[in-house]
Image (cartoon, rainbow, N blue to C red; front, side, top):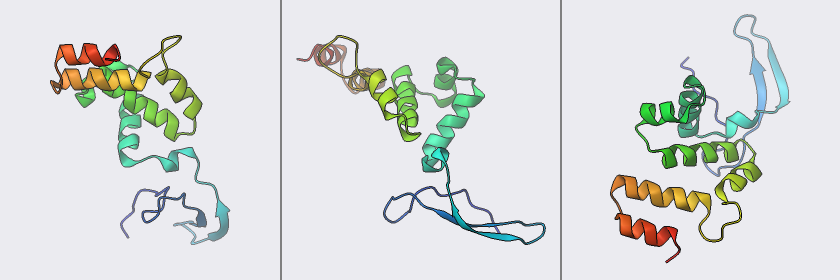
Length: 133
């Protein structure tokens, strides 16, 4: 039988799934109950891929940028999304909010820089958006 990756969320409604049975391949023992999947089961395949690349590069964002062909703002955005998906939303929100500065959140500033690096907006448009105009 082909093995599939563990699903953490229902593909129909998106709610967390619950493991109710475990089985041993060797002796055919089956254990029934309700088991926790853990934080990592909630990750999307894209988040798993990012996590693997991030760990392989020992958290070096520049190396992750090179491996994935992404800009720094895009890598930071994915890292913030991963942190939030693992259940640390307050940490992700703290990182997004500039200290003592009104205006755009960190995530919004990173998005503007990402658009600029892709050529989707001009430098003047980026400056105006970053200044809140």
